[in-house]
Length: 524
Image 1: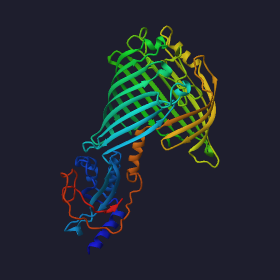
Image 2 (image 1 turned 180 degrees about the vertical axis):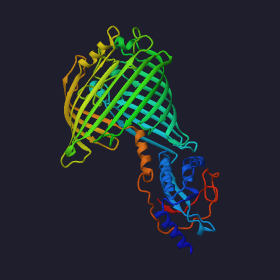
Image 3 (image 1 turned 135 degrees about the horizontal axis):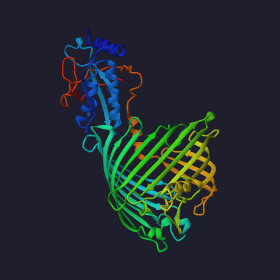
Image 4 (image 1 turned 30 degrees about the vertical axis):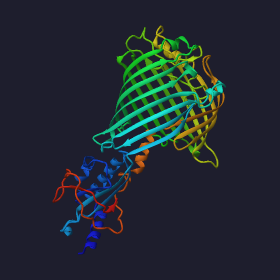
């Protein structure tokens, strides 16, 4: 039997005998320049212990998917080959696993603009991937924002000259045990916010955070975070209300928070089915001079209807409660909730619902908001453009310690603000644009109305874009059929030197080795 017939026999064996015994002779990583060998030793442990052809292929695909979700590879190709041994005729059940990788650039920078409600931002970012060779990342961001509607309200203000805020942020993320679903992130930031338009003051915040992240758990994603924040309310306007003035100055918040996220929607921007749940709980008072318990819930359910129609229901609510002295404690303006605008309750100004003191919007301690939307297909237009009919309602109140909690709850739900309207929803690559004609139906005396044509822009988080990029770079899903595809023109692998210590896992006659090689093998 010559060399070619030996390869042909080996190929036929692996295709038709997935349940037959087989062992991994070596694992070869091609194209890895910056990633440490210990990463591959950890990821491919189960591959080394596989005992059948089917297990080898399945575990190899899982391992490649694991690598892809680390976000440091541009492409990953998995192949199988026969070992080049002197007694190869008797080694049909020995397998070389070959993984060809192309790493993403370690250093990359980007600039751009973000246009949101009432403001536009210029963004610059400098990022470093795979910092120490174990999928760590270091990210820095600089943002400069300008008010987009202030020149319309004050003709003396020129466009692009009224600063709405600026921020600088850095984050260092490290996966735990090279697991993309478990990571620790530490960071720091400095922000400046111009709130003179609605609340007659500016605010500076300096903060440090430490976060433990768990993703792709049975029920969803979790984040446990500790943060210390030095806040400074300053530059108080001459016309500022007493509610703003009494919170002026410095405050130190030390808090621990937990966030849970479950998202099964088929599209984050314009979904046609699925559900979304997010909860956030925060406990402040671990030092500093700010103490409260804060909780928030947000949920959405989308129903797919016949003929391309979709019905979307949403509900969100939250509460901010003092925990040391309920009778005498008060909440600060920079901890409260705000409500109103095209992303919460359409037909009202941004943060236009809830308590005010003079002309200042001061926020509230409890809120709820609900929405019902019908998305309709439009003839001759793309599925990314939908007709939109909606009704929104909600309320925002401060807690009155002089009355019972049940009475506070009744005050919150008995007098909602309500609006309805219709328009268009257009999906772009990273944002959704809404153009709606809104009519407030039920209002209170403090509400800021925005009747008529309204525009709203919603943007999906950059973290989810990065995750999607990593998913697209992964090989075929391990849940698919495990039949390998035979590659034409198999070449005998070249002599190579091992680049790692011997990895754990059995082999029929020798310890497992990890190599650098350029052999294509059999792609699976």
